[in-house]
Image 1: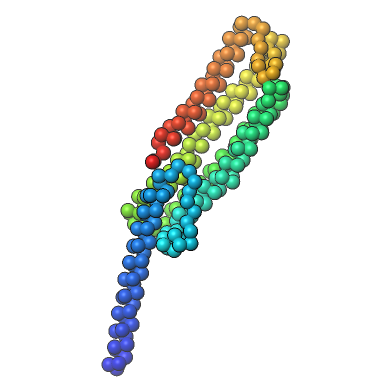
Image 2: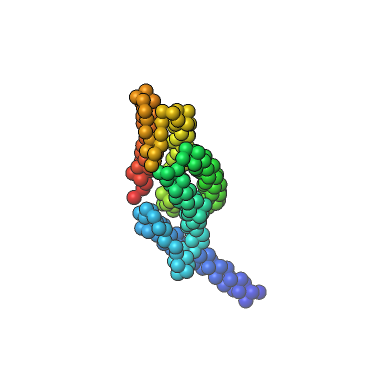
Amino acid sequence: MKKHFHSFLLLWMLGIVLLLTGCGRELQQRHAFAGFLQKEVIPRNSGLIIPTKAMRKKFGEYATQYDVIVDFNNAMHEKVGRPLDKLQRDFAEAMKPEAGVDERKAATVEYMKILAEIEKALDAELTRTEQRIAVFQQPAELQAVFTQAVDKHVRLPAQTLKLMIPATNEMLKKNLALLDFVVANKGKILIKDGMIQVKDQSTLAQLNRMQADIAKTAQTIQTQHTEFTQQTPK
């Protein structure tokens, strides 16, 4: 009986030691992960670091939390960045100087269609990312640092793009209106080598107002991008 009691006591003590060792390891992993976020992730404006096997071992289960940020950025590259880059290149090609009004209108409508698809992909990926983050159990001090990293590399870029998309659509609609105006006044307006030539002052004044309105919308888009750059945590 006494021997049995001693064995039980030994197992109990070993259990406590293992629990304490586990707690100490978790604390080390947490501090290592928080330090990594503060020094290597939050200050970066682009090019997220992909942890090595040694780093993942050092972060323990917290490595999977960083994966959420990396996964979002990878998804944005594939589902938003690449399609948007191709869209802009195709649009620039379609709007070459020798393009006619019909070609320009078709390219503008196609741009709006694909931009809507990109926005849908962005919304879906952001929702998925927020759902993954919502289940994390983090101590308050780590949560604060992790939130900074998520804000900079997930939420702010997504919110900026979501702000710029409506303004871009507005500008494209105004471009369509301008092209319709050109068609409606084809006897007074001529497009040659990408330049618009107008025969009378009244039509020229109206055309100038439309172009100024488009330029104003373009400036809004630029301002939104500048504000995002200034607000991004350093």
